[in-house]
Structure formats: C-alpha cells, structure tokens
Image 1 (cartoon, rainbow, N blue to C red):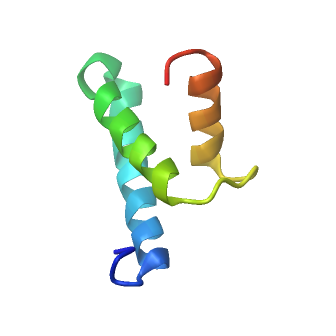
Image 2 (spheres, rainbow, N blue to C red; image 1 turned 45 degrees about the vertical axis):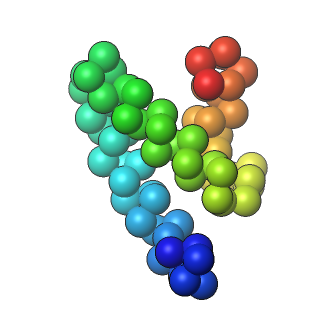
Image 3 (spheres, rainbow, N blue to C red; image 1 turned 135 degrees about the vertical axis):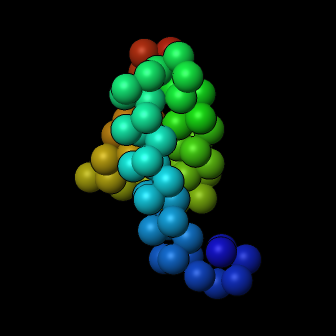
Length: 68
C-alpha cells in the first residue's frame, strides 16, 4: 500500500490485522503470539512512532521487557 501511495489505507489494514492477531494471542499466546509479534514488528517499521499510538506503546513495552 505504501508503494502505491496509500499510506493511510495501509495503516488501517495493519491496525485491523493487529486487532485480530492481538485477540488471538491473548486467548492462546503459544499458538498466536509469534504471529502477533510479526505483524506488530512490520507495523512499527512503516508507521511513524507516536506516543499515543497503542500499538507503538505495546511495541515499546515488549522491547523494554526484552521480548522484542
């Protein structure tokens, strides 16, 4: 989406995927935690960091704990 100039649509797609993967990871971390982490890692690679972005907050927390 970024290469097509559709940054906002891409961000929304990532956020939808993050909501889905986060819910699954909460229910079954062993089965879905890695998938959530991969989507989150890709999100922070293409999305500017903002202090109020909940996904960036989770990313910072994971990295602070040494999980990221």
